[in-house]
Image (cartoon, rainbow, N blue to C red):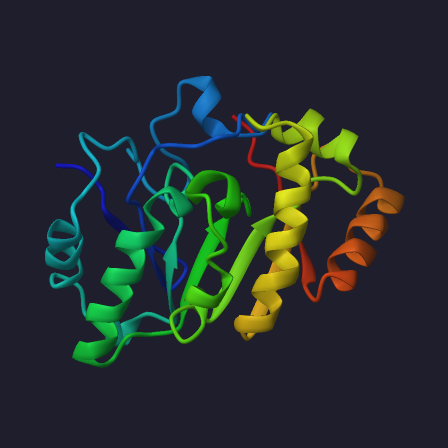
Length: 204
């Protein structure tokens, strides 16, 4: 049975895709891992339909969670249209906790359109993977399919999301990051209307 939703630290995480347009150097996916500290196996047999996702949500008491996080073992924006439908259906039923989406910020490249306005009223927090204070560092760490265009797309998405979403966070993993580099990342995040969160590296 594949893992569509899973619990971690009082939040409910949602795993709807394993697709990703990056190959981040710290990603557990590269080392033969099926999951992480969050869940044992996050590889999907197939991408869940909206109905399958809603059926999985129906087995959970949403009132007990502090947050619902669209994340998983891939880039959730590949499924944004379906995520929006799931959120709309759950909100219509009432009792949906605050919603966060963890993304690399490449929505424009993945979907071919600006989705920032579509986040309004659906998403309470957007968390964007920053991973470096320069295009060169970003490409070295993130290894995006679209190269430097991905860096620019991520910055633009973050800036626009901050207009529509109450809270925008950018994250860096602390692996091989000096205090000076982290401070540059913090300043960049703030210039885009976001705050910085430093994530601890999860070793093998």
